[in-house]
Length: 448
Image (cartoon, rainbow, N blue to C red; front, side, top):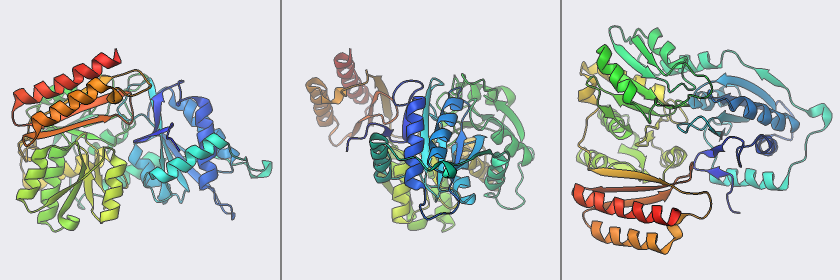
């Protein structure tokens, strides 16, 4: 069956446009409720979290209606980070977890992410079954079996305690000045509170959500303001989260930005030295820099690459028995502690390294020299992908021939937005620009 609803991270799109309508959310709620509801009696629970988007109220209500119609009891967490849903789903013995968020996307977008009873994101097979149920429709429960809804007021506090528990007992951040950019998103209270409780001098950015300013010129995809704040305040480090706080981008004391690859290099080497890195393997996607792979090889470690999407990273980690993975974009997954990417948890691990080693952020966030990499995104109208056009195929083939033995090329359709992502790596920066710009030009031409 063709997947029309689910992308690489749940269902996502512009609010009040297909597939992100109230009607579709209601049908998704009913379908996923029917799929996960046990028919042999007992309590049937689903926990729902959301970020700070205005449309979150609409989707929260629609999902609740669909879920309760199939007999699911709904526990509403309110604004919490995505990893909090992954944590609280098994903790509260729920059958299902749902996060209403479009992550790093602008405020006009929204999305619905699903977690199974184990706290991990759903597989492609389960998503396909839910999509089938949406298309076919589901039978609602008998009137006496309709579910109930209840607000849970302490969900974020439970999550905050879990995050702090990942640090060594007694570790404090006294004397450390930390800029934290919460992207006006789900962690706008959680992240500053955790850092303050651990003793840090906290300088908050992006902590005044109004429903329309999530990720607006702030957060992990736009760290410039946070970088300027670090320098202006003489902070030791900056932590930039995205709208649902499952990503992190680090900023050192000089205002330089470090991506997820640099973080993974640091933690992988540290865990390997402590014999904690299972299988001597780090899992990341095809987007991670070649420099990271070379760094790991020099240390006798290996990089296992997956398709793009943090849930594919997690699936590979679980299949291989590995405990560290992530994405260059800042998803960091540590399955010893969490079931999905957790930006705040990763940030605390970095701060722990600063305390343990006494080294500045700049020394810890530059483990390897990246191979020059260029990524450009080309927006296209929803419909047939430009990658099927003959001129684009020809440009890609020509670029692959030019890079043969000198670098690598990755062209893909975004799973969350109508974008074609054109990425290449090459030591020859002139050739790098030539091949990327050539493909981008052809994609733009056929998309015009």
